[in-house]
Amino acid sequence: MTRTTPPRPVDAEAQFPGLSDYRRTSTRLHPRPGSPKADDSSVAGPLLWPADEPWPVCTAVHPKGSGNRLSDVRLQRRILDGAWHRHPGAGPTDAERAVLDTLQPGPHAPQIADADPIPLLAAAQLFARDVPDLTGPDGCDLLQVLWCPFEVHGPDRTIEVVLKWRRSQDVGEVLDLNPEPVVVGRAECVPNTCVLHPEQVVEHEYEGLLDEGLQEAIEMWEAGDDEEDDDAFDSSGPSGFDTYEEYEAAMAAARADEDDEVTYRGDLSIAPGWKVGGFASWHLTDPAHIDCGVCGAPMPPLLTVAVSEWDGASESWIPLEDRDSLPDSRISDPTGVYLGRGLMRVHTCPTTPVHPHRLSFQ
Ligand SMILES: [Zn+2]
Ligand SMILES: [Zn+2]
Image (tube, rainbow, N blue to C red):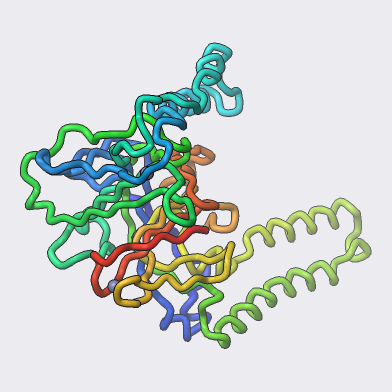
C-alpha cells in the first residue's frame, strides 16, 4: 500500500514567497511492520550482503555482555503488541506478565569481554530506486546502515553508526541471515523489522535558520491567527449569549479551532518520522553547524531516525491511508527506536559522500 501525505493546510510558498529559496525535498520512509526480503528497502530487514564479505563488528572497548538480550526485546514487544491487539487498554494477561517480569536487563553474556568484536545490528537498507533523495557516491544505488546498540561511543556516548554504500548489481551470492549481537545496551536501540512505503515530500528550512524577514512574517502570521481567536472570545463573552450553555458550546468550538491551528513548525516546514534528505529540526537546542571534518562542507541530514512518525503538533502529516487505523503504535511508532531525545540524524558530506559522516540528536 502506498502512503500519501495530505496537501499542506496552507501553501507555504504562496503565503511567504521568499520561502522558495529554503525548499528541499525529502523522502518519508513510512516504515510499517512487515517481512522485507534482502532485495527490498527496509528497516532492520535482511541486508543484501555478499556472503563472502565480513560483517561489520564493533571493536570499541566497552561492556558488551550486559544489557538486554536481543531475543528478550523481541519477545517483550510481541507480547505487548499481541495484548494491545487483543484488547487495547486491557494489558497483558497474568501469564504474560509473569513472562515479561523475567525479561530484565543484566549481565546476560559474561563470556563476551569488553574488547571482543560483536556484530553490528542491521538498522536500514535503502535502494536509490525507492528513495529519490538518497544521494551517495557515484554509481552506488544502495545504502546499508548498521549500528552498535550500546550508547557508549565517542564523547557524546551514542550508538555507533556504520554506513555501507554499494552497487547492488555487484553483490553475488547473498548472506543468508544477518549476524546479530546477543545483548544490546538498551531495548530502544533495536528497530522492529519494517517494510518501507517511501514518499517524496517538500520541506522548508527550520524556522530559526530562515532570514529575519521571513521569520518575522511567519511570526506575525501565526500571531494573527491567535488574535482572530482572541477577538472571537472578546466579542462573545457570556453576556453576548442567551444562555450559558450556548456560550460554553461556542468556547468548545473555539478551542477545537485552536487545536487545528496551522503552524509553520508543525505543518509547513519539516516532515516528522523516519526520512531521507530534507532539513534538520532544532526544536530542543540551538541550531548546530554540522560540517564535514575533511572538507568543511556543511552536511545536510541524510537519514533521520525518529521516535514516532508524528506527534500532536504534526498530525497534519499523518498519511491518509493510516487515519482510520489509529491509534495503533505499529503505525505511529512502527520501529520502536528511541535515540537521543527522540531524533537521531546521520549527516553526510554533499560533495564527497564517503567522507566520515556525523550524527546529530534532538
Ligand atoms: Zn560498540
Ligand atoms: Zn567532505
